[in-house]
Image (cartoon, rainbow, N blue to C red; front, side, top):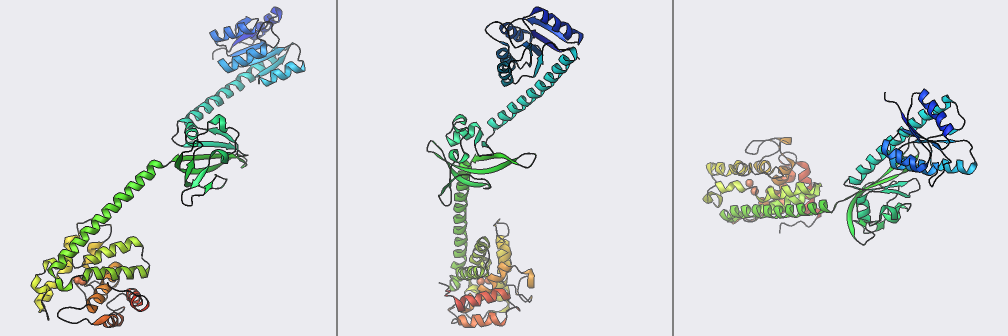
Length: 449
Ligand SMILES: [Fe+2]
Ligand SMILES: [Fe+2]
């Protein structure tokens, strides 16, 4: 291990020689002996000793206490004070400079060794702590969030540069001010001005800068608890979310545009089919309207209702494959004609299956002629195998078809349609859907138009 290098600052040569001998016999390396504060600083800057033994009372412009302060602050060299007498004023002044040791002349070798070892240990710890603080402060300064720390009384102790920029306060101005006086927000939803307070969790608000600007922020107030679980202060972390807000807005706008485009396409598809089958013009739109009303009555979420609406609008899209003569044939259909008509569910599925809708549109379409007891087509699905969304379209389809007027037959009327679904409730048609559909006609003013 390299020897500890010590500089002695002592203007009495006899004493200096004594100390020098003691140090050598204790296996320390004596870098030199100087007699004034000025010379001590000069020597320290050149040869960087590990420790300085300093007589408090020195001749010259710089006394021991001033020199010790500079040695620690500028060169991180710990100092042990030596003095032959300890008058109260000197002692108090020396204490203020937080010496790493204090030793009264005359002293024993053993005493000197203990004091030196303690001073080296203490200064080492202090330097490590200082490094850590510097590291932490660099991290906090370079971090992409605004950070304000307070003590337990809510008085500001630290602000990083981003916090300074966003609040319009410098750390020096804000130091020892109450957090609410510096960090002031407006609630984005209510428009009320409020200040962060203990226990108030994360949230999105508008930060009102001292310089008059406003920044949307997301903030969290975190209490700091010490090892004994006592509150020690708070850290407020906040982030500028202007960019994220703008991205969210753009995303919403682009979603709206896409939705409108999708709606337009669905509408166009719906009209295309109905152009070939003018007798049932408007059927899909009306089925869609009734299906949505039932879904809303049941209490389904709006996103699901949106899918039901689109499925309703194009549920008969497969009819594009059925010859127009069959579609518009007045009177009863032959078995073959009916078989051809029945293909429209599967054809509809085939047309739609590769389109990535956010809803199971193709499945709803293929199931829209299934029946609860397995008597429907094309797959004779039973019970739970049929989607709720499809069950809603099934009931809406039957009610609309029966209650509408056709050129080749008069309308059966809504009452007959209601009787049909009520009689077959739980047999052909889903009971919940039927109940809500009946309630819609009996208790509200639902109208297809
Ligand atoms: Fe159909
Ligand atoms: Fe239909």
